[in-house]
Length: 430
Image (cartoon, rainbow, N blue to C red; front, side):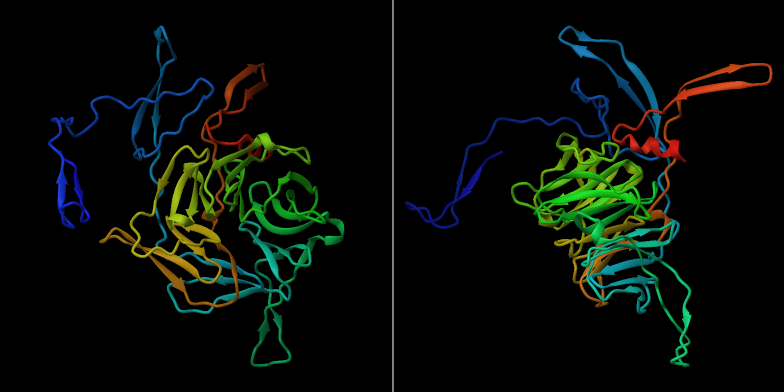
């Protein structure tokens, strides 16, 4: 090959003239096609797990592990892993959405039709945070007066005797579960652990410019500190109960990033800085959602106007929106996914995706609904809050049999490498 440089006008050379190097030495490339040998990964001695991505569904893979030092390699431990079938998309219609603004919570059942959303709740004061529990059919809100409240998602309408032409009115009942006079912080955002029926509340400490995360039951009982070491306000916070982690984003040029806390490591007021893992060192991240069964977080990279798939430890990052006709991901306040398509808001508008099989491209579309500043987008379906199934069997199973009785004991199953301990605790409780 050669290197060519386009010149500006200089010492007899005219603009656009080329200065070309002499030819390089001959370079040979290896043959294409299938790899001649299996892939190898060197794992540091302080690590006992690894995630391998981009595998094919319904395939068998052989994994061989060897210990190695300066004297050579030891004997291998070999196992065969079978990948499950890919989850099939059975419902091609757009899912029902729940949209939260600074004053109103809406339900939109059909994106394909030009219909007005149903108002589930309307507030006279500003809503700070909104959470959703699908199985309990409950909404949770924090407001500017400092209350944390729950609202039944569907309630009976009451007769409207004042207007005979409008037979029923919707009258939601808000139930306060935490009151400001009993709190040492101002509740801001909220996220729902639907497996363990708990709330995680982000708040600003009163009389101090600092932030705290607390946890309580759905009725407000057992309020305790999760993490008290936040000097900057997270722009987005969500719980992943399937894998046992709490995640949040901080947008800051110097200290911004994507952070993770194992929810089994609850400090209850004790500083837990060493337990916080900075998964991504990126300053302009937006909202995120989860691909629970693939152990991935789907994070909006606002600076790049795209969404990245990130493993729970942050070691593997992949751009999953490289073929978008005109991307609208430059600002993402809330993000949700259903059937591998995204739904999100930038605060002003609500967007949804379509995929064109012919062009292999995604198209971003805006919903024309104006109800104020949008804060949250939820998918109103069971798939958005799935229930887990154990992946590995119990270990060290032992049994002693008598004539008419048997006693069995066992140890917990091995966790998948990136899962938190709280994942197994859920099965013990249930």
